[in-house]
Image (tube, rainbow, N blue to C red; front, side, top):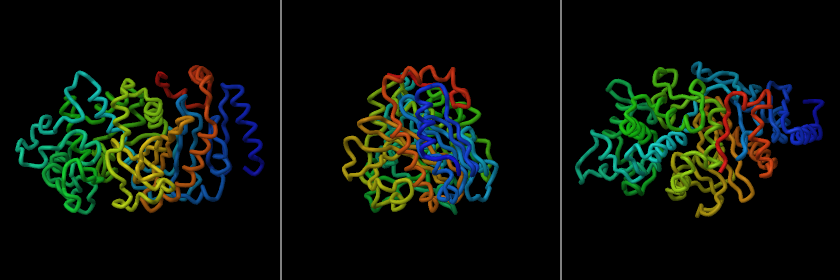
Length: 428
């Protein structure tokens, strides 16, 4: 962007805001591009040496309650070791990539959708022994007390799998979600003795509870494929495209070791995940059920920074206290983590970072969908771009009177997400 100044960008943004139906599109010299009307200085950042020194290509979508307002991608980065076709060297906003633990937020809403549906006999406090036929019926067995709420908050006391990778299901049974859930049930309970090993009190971040959560969804819905369950619940509410966001139970272990895991197996594009963030941030998902929506974001654990050292690094930088809600984190400036907490998020091991930022002025949201096989150690490389993007979308907050402009915009914009079935939820 040698001839593209910040002043030029501001002028373009102003023109886009005035015209309303024209989307800013800037193709950068370093192999990145951005579109939208709230991109601020993101373009200059993507063209900088800081951005090009990060590891792994990424796409991003940013927005507020009126919809997405900036999106783009960058392949002008250091390369990665390509584990499989799921880890491409170039990424666009429509490119499906592994979400890893960013899957947990959506899977939690799968369960919440089943709870919200009167056709299913499921509540937050439903004990698992009343749902799963293979669950203990012995009152003296501490697993007898485990509820749906415990699974959602990871206070179920199920720990890690045995084997070389404690996050990946290791079972002698045939490979399936149900058999992995049974393996977790039989062999991983009670691994937090130092915390009292009490259901509902001790928090353990793991994958095992999400396999069990998937088995609950199978049993309650009567559907075997978790991908079908996902699209019949969250997917249907958010108009998520099946071909660009899915749990593929047929992917081999070598292609994606988390493929059967409802807590880490989602393969999704930034565009499709953004639809979910939009629906949650505008509180239109779950039919606007305020009780469930409030419960989903409520603090269900104490501050976790002391127990999970990695929380002080990467995307959590600057928000030192963290509590776990339903399948995602609350990032807070104060240990009490009450009141108008700043942010909810659900970071993934490969570098994907979705968030919703709430302030008294406006709620904004975003996702950086990143392809990086380096894992935790390279999250720090993405902290700076995340901050740049958060600041840009907040600075471009949209006044309420322009809502109608955004409602009608999908019929007028070209080169935009709206032309790929990005459907706006009904505003309250």
